[in-house]
Image (cartoon, rainbow, N blue to C red; front, side, top):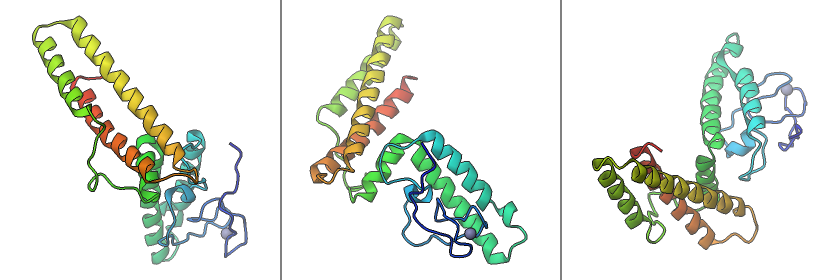
Length: 206
Ligand SMILES: [Zn+2]
């Protein structure tokens, strides 16, 4: 990805083009971003699911360096405070955007979709299927049936991959102007599903 300036603003101190609203890469001035800046904008990205992960990492490293408290140790106290505050926001933003599931969850929240506390629904038949897989696995393990435990692990792997692909597909569609409540509900459901599936995957060491 070319270094595009999706954050179309110039530094109010030195007038350089900025790629992130948190810091000017030319004069290193830090900016208080308590106003409504989403994680995508912090890194100069468009608000959409597909992002260039190498570019994300590159920008994270560069911004972290420019914002780092050591870099501002000779500045006045409130700048030091701001530096620590932005560093923590950057870390949180990077942690969210670098994980595609967390990124999908974040996009859903930005689009006004329900959070996991409000809407705990899961796809039909998922929970009975998970219970079935778990019980079959425990049974096969008790029998020392390695072929069977391998087979169940494989089924869980497939279920996990399919659910992830479904989440990514839905998260991509969140951009389209036609996105509606049923799409957000479906994404919520699949994001709830992946938690159960990941728990099961951990249980069987997939
Ligand atoms: Zn500047």
